[in-house]
Amino acid sequence: MSAIFMFVGLALAAALLFGGFQTRSSQVRIASAVAAGVVLFAAFTLASFRFVNEEQLGVVVKNVGFSSLEPGKIIATEGEKGPQARILPPGWHPWYWPFIYDIDKHPVIEIDAGKVGLLAAADGQPLPDNTAYAPEWPSGEEKLMAQDARYFLTDGGGFRGPQTSVLKPGNTASIPSCSRSRWCL
Image (cartoon, rainbow, N blue to C red):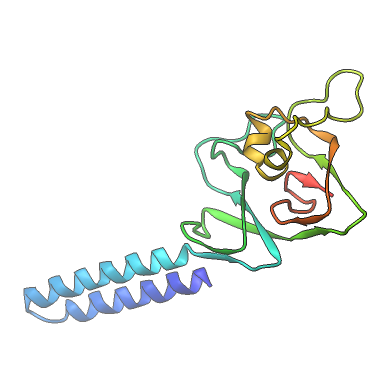
């Protein structure tokens, strides 16, 4: 859909410029150039909108940038190229141009009553020596640790690998399933 906006915008802007410069009137030429600029700006802006439907989450993957991820890291927390820590909730999201970003969509996970969600983080600090599971998350920070990858990877000090903390029953709308994302359920 984004490519259609860009193509139509470019074609319309080219038609405005070509039509305006066919005349001898400098006012018409200026008006057609301004109109072409407005059309290009509108098309460029509309092309940036991305939609994530109600049953999905969007994992932002940045394809273009000046900095790459550090060796051993797979989730970008400071805008580096690669999968971003920011997860897009359902709805419309502007400023994600298709030539810069891909949006990988994952289904929302619902944990049924009587069950828990087991987590395995794909990124974070290495597990402490002689441990098989990450330490329990601090009390009161469970939701923040589970739903904010940037916090988990920076201030929260989260560990990669299987987590001792589990997700309780309910809708875990901001945790995508496995892939290039940060969690595996």
